[in-house]
Image (cartoon, rainbow, N blue to C red; front, side):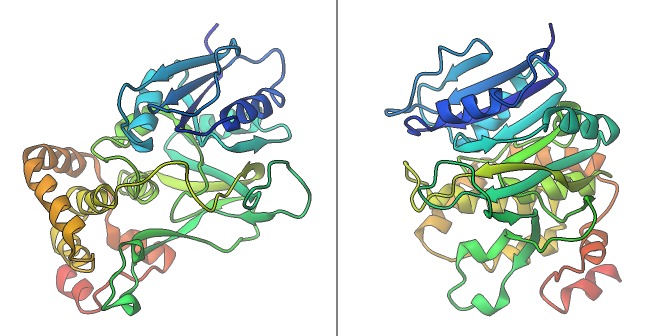
Length: 321
């Protein structure tokens, strides 16, 4: 029987959290529904064994590839066209499955996210009164961050305020609870080209809009996320910068991409990232050519729709002339 939903769950050194996440997820799925969980172990040295779950299909990397690569691998392996991406430290509640598949069916060109319940640092159980987060807005650049120019103040999703409707458009998905049609994910290029971790939410969200789709949030589904003060692994800042530059060079107008890259910190990580970009130049041009062929709207229309500032102030009028 083909599953009604494929859940993609990468993990790395999460100890017992993947088991707790799977138990929570399966505890909320009706017995008559078939769901597959694709668990990608990104070369862990300290994580629980999921082999005892019949519906879990395990994949293991012999070397660390990063969460974005793992997510791409999982979606490609999915047997269902309905896909949910999660982290390995989450909790589920309520009747979410049918709502999710119905929304995907009715909105096949949408990147969806749910309300994110923040469980707080070190909290492992669902409880009342947890903070609720409703997707994100897009920060192209925080010009006030100059001259420090921190990398996290350029091309970053920032939690957005809640709006009254149950379902509404949002600039950017956020919360590690993204569901969508595999066909649409594939059409917009998924997470291909990104390295390790970082910038995946802006990348997917902007591409969905530029290709004629959108991003939405539903307040009918809430998934809890364990926020951690420290990840159980290190993250390469060079890869984070690479991903931001990759986004600039593949899906944004060249003048805007060059402008935003100018706000990134010019340190040794930036130097290494640009060297990696130069090595991948031919591949990057191929990605850009593909996106040019499928994009039907522009970053200007996107920013106007959500009243998002696109710096520098003098550039917008110059490019629209």
